[in-house]
Image (cartoon, rainbow, N blue to C red; front, side, top):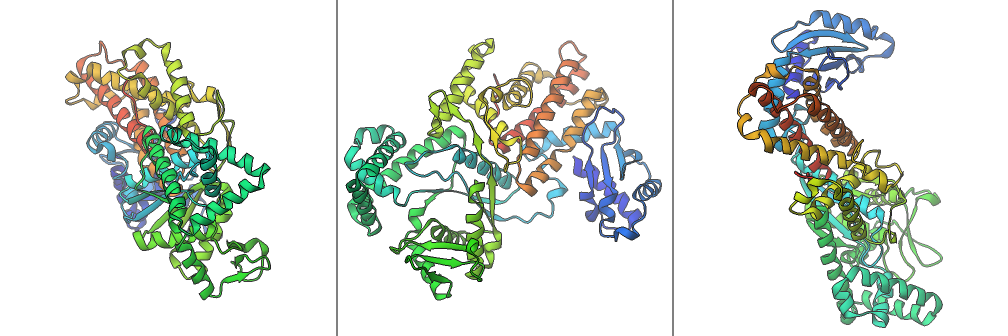
Length: 578
């Protein structure tokens, strides 16, 4: 694999530069594919070698690169050494490249790219990822959908790298909305509807009681009274609240299963209603709690009265707020899991909230606050179903399935599928995830159903189509050819381009592991699929000599394996027929 070649190059460089090979590994990168057939496979960034030097005394980089290249020698691995702009380039012996890459892909399977030396000094950590976090009885809006798929990607990637990951769904299951909901259900609720479609019915009740409370003060008063009973632990009120919560979680689990997503823990704000009182006492004991004229309690994070650094942590009636409950949750999770990192995945509108929570933890004396990280994301505009605005995640999933089934209906192979609904949903989800992951997570983007479902171009449908087509090749020709292969049969430009691209997979995984951005993997997989499409047209298996057909089939199998690995990290289940 790439790291094996990197080490050979690093060892030769270390002898010339008198530096340990480990110091050079990350300065050697696989060269992105180009139309130039004679392009090198690896390059050393001379800048990275000199970056510790003072700029003014630094020799001309190009001269430095040339001098370095002249001191290096070709061997059985490196067949050519040249210089580029600020780089020293290395071309690998073509037959060795072919044999090594294909062997490594097949042997490593789902671990290909993850065993790279780029990750060799990576300490194994315990990582908590909090994501999705819908509000019970409120809209499961598009922001929660983004949090769900982004959080799942981060958890998948961390797990693949060998970390122990705890996936937490922190539900919005406490607060004044439950006063409204309890009152609303007593006035307008139906037990049968609650049992058959809990999320929809609770949402309808919530809408209705909000309207009534706005027009009728007695309803608003009843809602306040119900929430006060909840806070005081009234058995009847808590029993109804518990029923709403349990039924909602059951429904969420069913929907998350359709997405292929699971959680290790369903937590919620309700769990910390008592522990947040302990947080308030701790803040007071440390002299950090300040009372206002209105009777609320605040924390001055800056310590100098800066209004932008004031965070309210208690209402005038003594009840806690979202920030207080987040403080309690963070402290509890550290006690429970002793995590090395905790990642919160929410929209960018909560950036200030998390900055304040982390800063408050720090001034409370919790040094581990530095291990907490917020991964923010942008807003999606224009996601509507044919029935109007998206209300629940299930509406999106049903819309995906319906549209994809209609797209597939015109293709004759659809009739042969055992479960066209399941295939349609998996292809549709791939389409949704790829559109979402193509850009920077922080960027807002305009959603387009038409663009999502294009089968050509850079879409999830194209990735699924490529995977299914490559799987079909293996089914058709695999039995007789997949024993051994002759590397000399894979020296065409199309084969070499694919091999060069496969070399880069570990670097792409490394980049995503550093910035938690899925776009690097998405871009890589789309390029791999385009290369496979070109090769599929030109590198025929049918009617080719057995030796040539076997070698090509090995190449296509390697492509499909890496494509599937990358898709699974993104949260996509590859389909074998389409």
